[in-house]
Image (cartoon, rainbow, N blue to C red; front, side, top):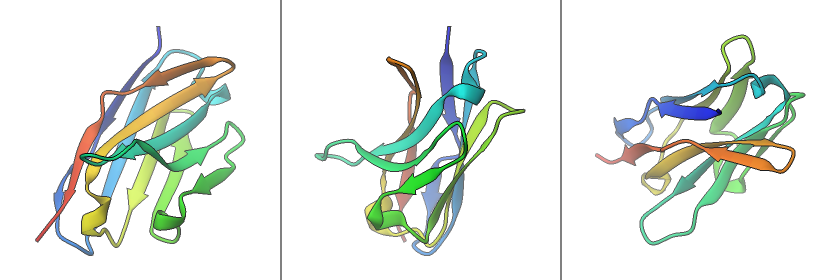
Length: 115
């Protein structure tokens, strides 16, 4: 059984930083691609950043230069470091694991950027 648990969300002022974590249970983490997605009220869920099993990364244009995705295979955890946060980054952030034809999602963590 694969389970994903996100943490690290919260309320932060514009220009601030947060680091999200996604801990994965199960033995497939090291060979899986991971992604962070977000969904703002009234909007579709969108990809924020992804990282392959070989640590190749990709980012949405809106977060390039501000967010960094990384993974620690020894801890079965993927991270999203978010700097220079903007009000438009406010959303529920989800992590996703993809391996072969299977996908697993976490429950999400709320990030609110407001003064």
